[in-house]
Image 1 (cartoon, rainbow, N blue to C red):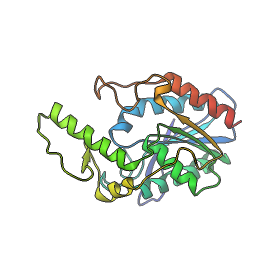
Image 2: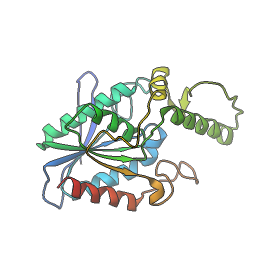
Image 3: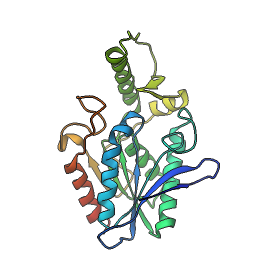
Length: 241
């Protein structure tokens, strides 16, 4: 695994390149698109394991942090859907050039899956997608984030939370700036019309049952859904032959 920075030198993004190991190198790369906030922290181990498995299968794999997230440039309240889509496009161009692979597939989890689908809508060269529990309704997602944040404050901070109107200002320690909330609220994906010719939709309920990004036993737990990872790896191995 090779860490590096890429993109605009004034707004660098952290990338982690997993080169092929074991199997012969393919003419394909895979970009992994992270979920948002606590969901990314919870899913980090699973996405790292997925990158390792794909690299073993001969893929160049790029994991990266969006602008304003993780170890990339920007403050945590500066992220936006438009910026993060641009970051995915930069990651696609970067891994294609760095690895010398003409074809790139996107694998996204939760909001990352939604972002991957939105990017694929405007790029004809991205016709292989893995959408892992994509967020189809942005407004419903905002309500979900708000409910989770209020529940945590009641149970762990022992604070009474007055239910206000509108989107959350914070989601389990991660700010949700007003522009981000506004753009999220307008997101709608039609599961009957995916924007790519080759799409695998992964539903956690078909595998381990528990979502990888949260666990009933608390945020200290980290789940690795081996069956789901195997399904993704196998599908990409066949679809990207």
